[in-house]
Length: 166
Image 1 (cartoon, helix red, strand yellow):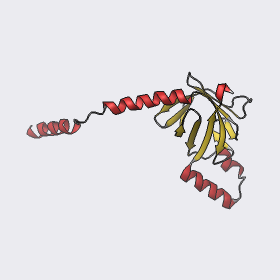
Image 2 (cartoon, rainbow, N blue to C red; image 1 turned 60 degrees about the vertical axis):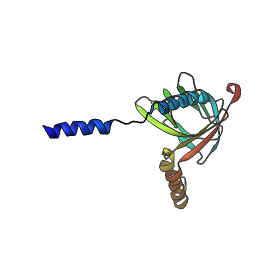
Image 3 (cartoon, one colour; image 1 turned 180 degrees about the horizontal axis):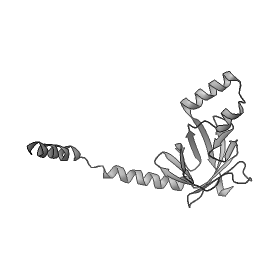
Image 4 (cartoon, helix red, strand yellow; image 1 turned 90 degrees about the vertical axis):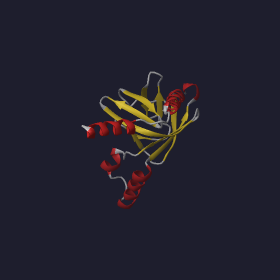
């Protein structure tokens, strides 16, 4: 019986911490709210470390000038060109700290938010585009090099805010 008492006492003692973490939680919520408001709007792709790149699951081979539209109701539309038709279907998004989570039906994937200001959005994804393997468009040496680069650094996509909705 003594052993059980000591184990319970030890568990209670180790489970309690004297530091107050409440202030950190508030800061995270504030930064997420700020990120949500900054990300809303239309963004045009101005650079990508891999071209074309892919946005899961229907937006294959996106190029420069593709547009990401983040709506205030947390829906996301992606267009291959500024005046084109949306290639996304039923996607929503959520900003969680430095992650941009995309939900499509029962699938979630995310981008890392590298930079977010009122003018610039820089995203990173470590997923290899499906066309990359399927088409074999690169010669073997270049393919290996690109594959290694994506695995190590991901694909970094830079977007600029389209003022007044484009």
